[in-house]
Length: 180
Ligand SMILES: [Zn+2]
Image (cartoon, rainbow, N blue to C red; front, top):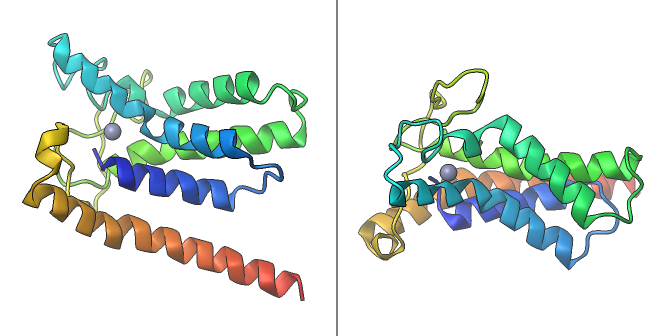
């Protein structure tokens, strides 16, 4: 996994880039939650489900289908004021899908563990990107407060936070240019 910080940084960037016009606290909160939700699958270790199983860590919860189902549920249940299938509905759906799908994308950039089951249930393969510069985050919280945790934060600063800031700067410059 990338760390909680890396995933929420990506989710907040998705939120900033989203053209949805009434972003309230709930929108931001749910975006962050959706971006870390796939890692609740670590509970599989408690039940002795193997890491490599489709029901294990980085299995079905790290797929595009899971991100889509969660985005559909969140958009339909938490944004009931938005008319179904309206432009805003699709924008909110796309925002939550992007936040959810950013999770396995970041995990696929890490240098440890097994790959992510991106195409579950159609393909049970575990995938990584070719370039994997992000230091994999420890699974246990106590291990995070160590030299390893610091290394994770450093690599996420360079390979997650800086690219996020770069995208936000482009958005800012585009908005500024268009408003002239
Ligand atoms: Zn993960």
